Length: 86
Image 1 (cartoon, rainbow, N blue to C red):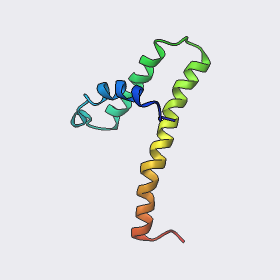
Image 2: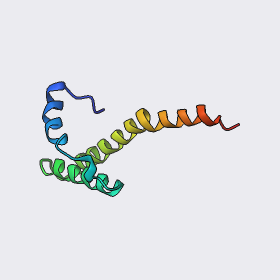
Image 3: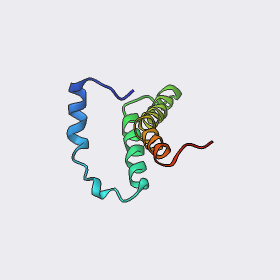
């Protein structure tokens, strides 16, 4: 999934860390950035189904990983605090 080599992470992190998260007003701002990144990625790829699918699937994989690492943890915490549904 998003676990690329450390040297590749450094390249992307330099650019991404320049973003000021205070500028993200809502989820639309985040969606714009994700979409724009996908479009930029596709500029270097042939416009064919497999590349388009890979691009969309990468976003899906990231959403799945985010859900697994953060949203699920939050839900588990809510269950512990409020009790499970019987």
